[in-house]
Length: 274
Image 1 (cartoon, rainbow, N blue to C red):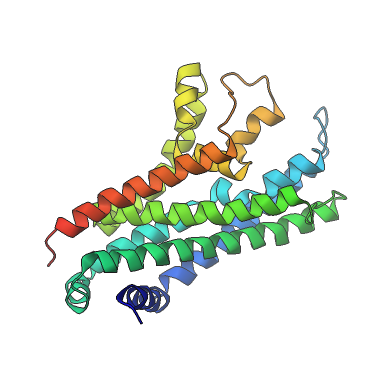
Image 2 (cartoon, one colour):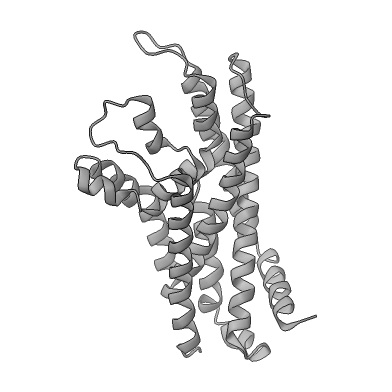
């Protein structure tokens, strides 16, 4: 077994021996389940004076993208916690003594962050389908579960979650403080970026820049999302512009993840540990 393989195996053991990963998974299931069910009910509801139920293609995209619409905080938080836990509990020194080559340790963490992020993506996708499709079917809407576009959306959801876990890993490694990482993750994902994306829509130049925020890039990659769907549902909304293409969204999100991890890796390799 090579040093890289041992590093990955050791990181897997470390991660899955703690409660953090499955507690976050439970929160993810509850969060996505409630959201997908709510979206499915909303898009199929008959409202007085409203447009009525949405077409199946639009409805399923909005419902099945629940994971990336509201729950990307979970893989992001996992990555941040994975990077900061050893600083908090001061176990980083024994880790580096067991494997003095720091790049090998960092490689193991990177691989595991991607794998667990992808796992969260799978869990989220399955939850959105299980709950969302049930509500859609109960209201007489075609679930389109065999449609290639839907399957592609679910696959891109898994990819997006893996990349967000990588973002969290880079952020946590840069900050080293677990409390600071948690606060920044929650504030940015739940308040700062959504507000920025909505406010930026008031001006063309700011709306153009907002397309490159991680959440906006994710919506472009996946092909659906709450904010991204506003223009599709109501093209008259001021400030709505054409989103990035799926490829562009994927490249932007990948570039942000790689850049943050690269900077974090450089600082980690140079940082003294206690």
